[in-house]
Length: 148
Image (tube, rainbow, N blue to C red):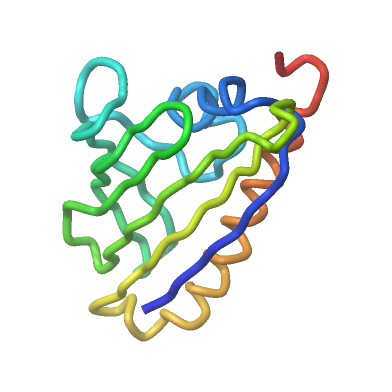
């Protein structure tokens, strides 16, 4: 099992950060993993989406289900398909004490099976780097004056 956790401070209140977690068009501005909706309507608990990552024989397509959607503070997901990877994760968004900014944290665990199990150490290290890089990209997107 691989665990990851990271956090960034963003100079925007949670109400301005939240849409970038839950709206697909805004999520695409900072995440390298594009998610395709499998359920209709706005995203909420129980919504499902498909995502594909990796290359060659280590390419996986997963179905994620949102297990918790608590605007504007928490978004959690879990895999509901077998693709060699079991992924559980969540984002937590908290206002800074002055109310002008946010602390955005994420954490998750990945369990690998099949060929993915053999690549777990290198894939896990890459995922940890990418998760932090994505949060830093989100920070940059939101703190650029045109973001609001």
